[in-house]
Length: 203
Image 1 (cartoon, rainbow, N blue to C red):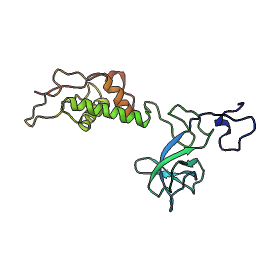
Image 2 (image 1 turned 180 degrees about the horizontal axis):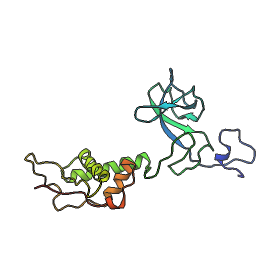
Image 3 (image 1 turned 180 degrees about the vertical axis):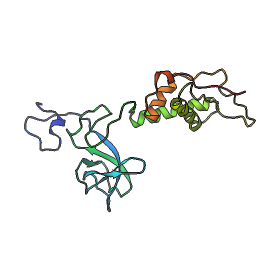
Image 4 (image 1 turned 90 degrees about the vertical axis):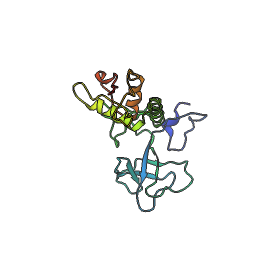
């Protein structure tokens, strides 16, 4: 082959292309807009965003950005979420994290992780909290307070035993691996001076 599949996607194949190939296709999770929804393979563009910030895609858009997941077997009704496959050769970078002129790139201090990696990191943190008899939400809130604090930081006491005593993390130091998973889940870079133990106790 003198041309690869990416170079010829979206068109009838010329005679100098054949055989087998594999491609990366950039996708983005979007919410279906419009009055009747969208169909598999239909062209769609971004027309806004949901309250959570997810792009809304519709057939009537100022600019077409990609196509509705062509592997779907039925219509995507308004409000449903689906993968929008971006047009070939329109992205400007690709490595699970891609850049595209129609979508804002992650800014300085932001971390991108594929959804599967983010879920894996969330599970690690849940298991880590459970090891101490703590819960995910409180541990992450404590880590948030620590990362966002100035000066010495906001140390995390852990759960109360009901009598105002908090000895859950007595003698324990935060596992350094925690911060790697925290970054993936929260999508932020933790400064070097914050990548230390934030556990303490009140006994």
